[in-house]
Picture (tube, one colour):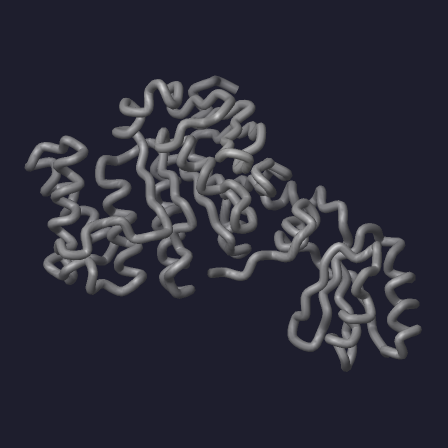
Length: 312
């Protein structure tokens, strides 16, 4: 594959804060126009990795190349070619929507005519025309998110880095936001998005799962599902909480979660099913057990060996 198709290349990337290793020998490769998702529990190193990739944080070890720029050496040159959006609204709340965008256009060095045209285009694209004179601090969560995205893409970056951008908005706003991201990808923008939502992870063309600063899985959602080492079972019974207690400490059980009146159990091997059934019958719990389709939550649990983090 030509090197021009590789937008992000990181090798042996590490970041230490004293005795804490936040990112541990990470290798990463992101191709042009991919929607690459970073998935991982809180504290797994997602935000630290993104900040190193965009030159905001100096790595302790390793090499980074982003859009042909060596980081941190070429961090200043890279700034005008990337967009960066954080989970916390970072624009000026005491400026209006249009004033925020005008300020960012000045920072990015756009001339007045180009800035005026681009701002008008983004206000229409992200449904902010009626709020153009409204103070940013008075916007709803979804409107703030769209304004932050408009600010991040104002200068038409080749690469957009988004750090849990939908953590504070409702499901409808999240769906609309992701439609906007796919429009950008279709236009050739490469996106790297960190998330803790499984439905968002499923939307990505490729996923990297981080755990304790290490990349423990990398591939398309389909590839990761096909490579799942565990086997998901659905246990239907009248007492799912009692069944969960009976299976606590079972070596074959990787994870359990109650889904309505049923218990979803991820076991290490297909052969474990008979032992699970035997254990529940010994506890005098009548159950029906069937295999079920794997999902990305199963993959996440299997490679990190810990429960999925609840959205904050």
